[in-house]
Amino acid sequence: MPTLSDTARREYHAEIADALPPPACDTPAARQARLQTAVETFAALDPADAFQARLVVQIVLCGAHAADSLRLARLHADDAAKVTRCRAQASSLMREFKAAKRILDQDRKAHPAATAAAAEGGRTQPLPRPAPQSGPQPAPQSGPQPAPQPRPQPAPQPRPQPAPQSRPQHAAQPAAALAPPADAAPCPAPAAAPRLHASLPKQRRGDVAFPTAPAVVDALLNGAGSVRWTADALRTAA
Image (cartoon, rainbow, N blue to C red; front, side, top):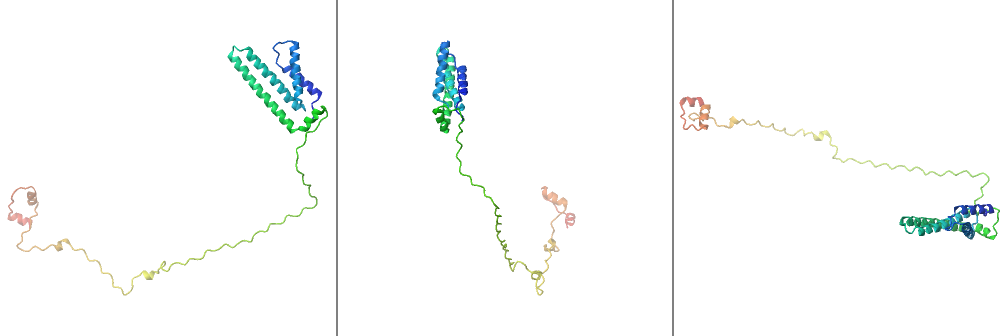
């Protein structure tokens, strides 16, 4: 890691001088005093290389502008809106100040050799950063490599066959068993249904049949009173 050269140091000093806020009493003497204070702050942080010097410049400028924002908030004490904006800007600058300081401390812990070399006398020759530690790498083997041995294949196992299942004896019956025996008596034929008129008793001579003539039935149903059965009506009904 190269140390901070005189050229880089002068460049950063000029950058600080251009970016510093003006003093309250803007005179050449006040400007020179402010620049001298910023340069001494830069030297107190003692950057070891250009990267650390960039962080130191950010720290110096953020601190100076934060202080100037607080001064403006005091000057505009009668304007609440301006006071609020100035204080918010000061708080934001202080957060940037702390973040840059934290990064600078982390870089110094990661590269302590470069920080020690810069503290000894500020050598201008490049000093390499320590390489990350790594384990020993195995040397490549020379000579013919042995051929890979084939992996033995397991012998195929025979697949077990299911045992044949026997059918029950009653499942299959021959057609002859279903036929009736030869010596069996034939089934009697169903008797014919008796006729309705066969069950009725026959009319004997001398009995009087019930008249079924339409005129007589109609007179009986309509309640026409007593009906005289004549010989003609009876003969007609018979």
